[in-house]
Structure formats: C-alpha cells, structure tokens
Amino acid sequence: MARRPRRKAEETRQDILSMAEMLFRERGYVAVSIADIAGALNMSPANVFKHFRSKVALVDAIAGRHLDNATERFLPLDQDMPAKEQLLRFVLRLLEGHLQDIQKSPYIFEMVLSTIEAKLEAGNRYRTRIEEKLGEIIRKGMAEGRYHCRDPEHAAHTVADVLSCVLHPVLIVRDDKETLVHRAGEIVGFVDAALQNSAC
Amino acid sequence: MARRPRRKAEETRQDILSMAEMLFRERGYVAVSIADIAGALNMSPANVFKHFRSKVALVDAIAGRHLDNATERFLPLDQDMPAKEQLLRFVLRLLEGHLQDIQKSPYIFEMVLSTIEAKLEAGNRYRTRIEEKLGEIIRKGMAEGRYHCRDPEHAAHTVADVLSCVLHPVLIVRDDKETLVHRAGEIVGFVDAALQNSAC
Image (cartoon, rainbow over all chains, first blue to last red; front, side):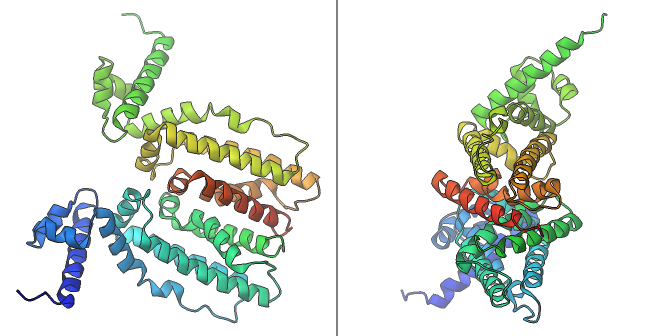
C-alpha cells in the first residue's frame, strides 16, 4: 500500500482540530472525550490519538491555532505615541482580545482552567510575543530618555508577569470591562513609574 | 417544642464544615455533593442547606475558617528592617503559606478553580488584610524618605494587584518554589522601584 501523503495527514489533523473546537463549543471542554471527537469524524479513537496524544495536546493545538493568528494584537503601534501611551494601548488591545475570547468562546476559559497545571507550548509562544512587544516599547521609552532600564529584555519579562492581573483569563473573568480598563490604566501607570527608575 | 439554642446551631455549622473538609480532602471538591456531606453526618440535605445555601457558600466558610486564622502571615515585621526588606519578607511569607495550602490540601486548589468566577467573602477579607499590611509597609517607606506615594492606600491596592503573579494559586501552581522565590524577588524590586517615583 502506498504511503499516505503528508498533505493528507495535515488535513486530518486540521479536521480533528475543527471538530474538537465545534464539540467543545457545543458541549463544553470537560464533557467531550477523544472518543466523541473520533466518533463525530467517523474515525477510530486510535487515529485521533496518532495525531494528538492527549486532550492537553489537543488544547495546545487549538490554543495555538487561535493565539498564533491573533496578529491584530501585535500590529505595530503608532511610533509618534510616547512609550507610556504605547504601553497602555498594547495592554488594552490584549485585554480586549482576552475578554472577547472568554465571551465568544466560553469553552476556551474551561480549557484554560482544565490545563492550568500544564505548560502549553501555545501559551509560551504567546507570552514570548508579548514580551518581545514589551521590549520594543521599553527600548522606545529608553530612546525617549524616559526609561532607564539596565536590561530591557529582563524588564519586559518582569512587566509581563506584572500584567497578569489584567491579562490572565482567571484574573479577569470575575470583573466587568470598566473595572478592568481602569485597572489596566493603574497598572500601566505603575509600570511606567518603575521603568523610570534606573534600579529597575 | 423549645427553640434550639444558638450554640447548637453554631455547633451544627462547624460539624458540617469539618465533615465537608474531610470529605473534600478524601475525595476531592468536585466529587462530593451536599447530599454526601449530609449523609456522612446522618442529617437531611435540607438541614445542611439551612446552614449553607450552596456549595460555594460552603467553600466560602471553609476558606474563611482557614484564611481568617492564617495569622502568622500577618505578624508584625521587624521594624528595624528597611521597607523594601519588609516587603520582600511579607511577600515570601504569603507565598510560603499559599504553597503549603496547595501542597497540604490539594482540594483547596480544586475549590479555588471551581469558584473562580464567584467573589468569595473570605477572599475579599484576606485581600483586605494583605492591602492593609502593604499600606503599613509603604507608609514605613515614606517615613524612611524612600517612597513618595501620593496615596499609600491606593498604592497598596495596585501593589496587591501586581503581586498576583507570585501569590494567586492559579499563577503559582505550575512553578517550583525556587522559580517563585526568584520571581518574588524580581517583582518586589520592581514594586520598590515604582514606589520611589512620586508619580506612583
């Protein structure tokens, strides 16, 4: 028997992901098993398992498909804006994106909760992109003479941690948008104050 | 029939809480129902319901019993220590406490996840105590001439948000203690830098 072409494997992979997303959306992440996904595709569970070794691997791929494409959050910022404004604009873009994810796709939140103890590759890639953007903004602030970091990459890493309270799904799900936008402003002001200090 | 004395009601309440904690510890938070707790106490579910209107109310009371007693985390700090040192000491005390909670009582983490969208009174009280302690430390730093906040209570609120990344159970459960202690040091350095800025 001829070897199946790679194209086919990639198509199967994408079919599994789309069906998993659809079922998660309909019935919730916890309620849907690998066997349900296989059944809905007229596949054997073993075939799904060949592509995704666990439900966590499936979540990682779905999250990746979504987050790797969230390019509008990382579009260039207006370079005429001062660094502090850029920072606020970027944080509000991310916050808006996260709130929409939670609202439009409640299963995403359930997925986040269920895999909270796993380190998802998709999450790491997303975090890296956030840190890169923060690094750009910090270097811009240094060029302006406003920020005085010794190590902008290191500062970007700490700022990404600090921003958890307005960006992490679990920490924003309880609050309304107005509260979160206000909090984002406070946190950005705080970050801006810290970055002006050369001890930072 | 004579009215049951208040003492009895409070005893029943405590019995329910202790049994709930025991069952949660044994079988996990999600697996145990109000009916299970009632059964184990030879009570009717309606009787349990009279004391706790929902599983969330039960979680709130258990969390309260635990957190309201976590007094060692809030003991006075050595007043000879500079404010930055006090801040680090306090954050490490809280981090240590939270890691122990997660490790010794895994059902607590499951409880946190299951009630993530609810605002628990016990959580609010705990957060208020943290903010009060942070306010004390910030005022101490102002007295030292190191910090220059316009409004120490407001700053304490923002700092409590910022500290989520080293204190919130969901944000610490993935990392080992060494990583977290390192992160706590970084975040405290960042907070200390921000508080030195009068814009803060």
